[in-house]
Length: 342
Image (cartoon, rainbow, N blue to C red; front, side):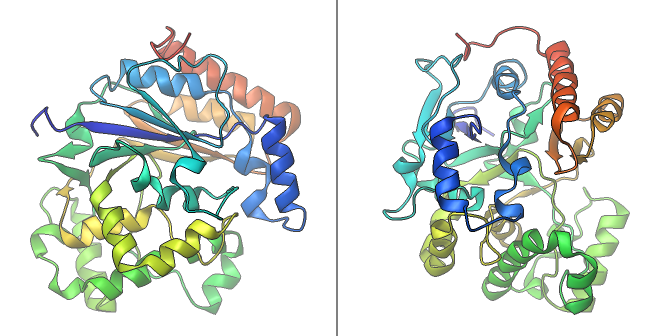
């Protein structure tokens, strides 16, 4: 890819310790107690500065960092950094949709960020780059580097009974898939895409099998790590499916009626607007206790892109211990202040 084609980063962050934000959350969530506004969804691991250090150290070729927040900023942030664009929710949301505590709602509005490049990588504050990576790890020839791998459908009464804890996430992903099946036919997809030689034999076999079984897209495997996107794809979806995206934008908390950022990814996949490649350098993991952090650190060899999700089981002193362990590890690989830090 020509180096004149800029690649931006979009980073979403919430400061759960901000008293104004906490008051606003309490005002709007007093009647809603569920996974969409649970403590673990918003609490801070105090590792944000290491994400910025990784931008400097591991992916210095990034053009701009669009930092999307409720309005709060970390005290250490160099707000005058030439690469930094601070984006408040009010800059991108339609009138009447704020305040929002729904990352899905934020993500469907990312195409409205002023000066956002066509090619960008989406980070959340629980996603990390752990090693130096070239731009071609994310984009090649102007297209996202990604993979298409189908799986068994997640639907029906038995699945809902067995996987109750996953229902919110599964419902939103199924909303994405329903839209995709209305826009594209799996049977018409070029075999060079779903049977790419860059995939493992297992992935090719799964894609062949589920194409024969379902005759439509069933389930897209994903890695919850920094994700490459095309701004124009989001633009297209706002034109073709304004009702679905507007509904997501208006949901203050995560809802079963939401779409997610992976809708953008899926559309690129079924259009063939990506470079097939199956990397084995990603990891997504749930953290239930501080020992999980220790075990995680021991298995990070070869992992370049990571996401960690803490659950409601991680509480109190054990949560504090886990954050200290994780920050200590990050400090060992990123010990020096970045240019984004004062």
